[in-house]
Length: 160
Image 1 (cartoon, rainbow, N blue to C red):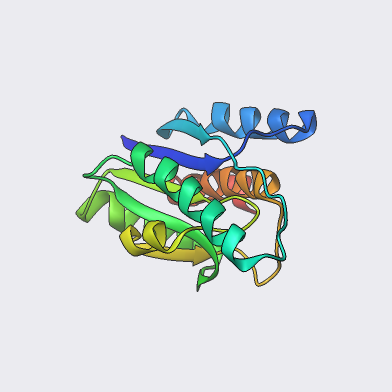
Image 2: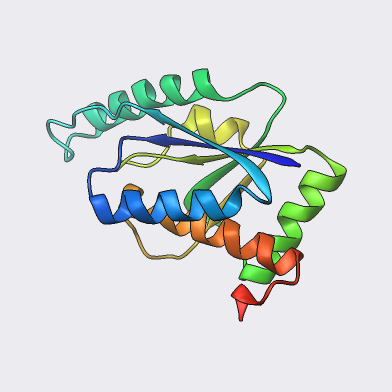
């Protein structure tokens, strides 16, 4: 069984997003063990100040790095990452978990993204779109796409 950990910055505040994540986490439990690790987001006083933004990214990055197991295959979600179709993502997850590592860690940054240190340990940066999404919504999108990937691999009709 594949072990998936989602390391993300911040907590989900909206109930509808929490409910959606919980639903997909329940559905995924038949295919994978899924853990969610939330790290506290840092307060941004002035997001127009590059120096302060770098400090926030660094602090959040240290928190993220502390939660990533050393032996895991790290996948960061980045707007500049590689894009996949749902089918391609399923094949990618299957290939990595079968031939390289059954412990996958997906990392979702905060409102400023990810620190360079977190990006440096990533084995694959993926993007779900060139559009920007709130990081809480991105968690739900990731869960849905993971579930879709597993249903594709299991040849279950959800994907259609």
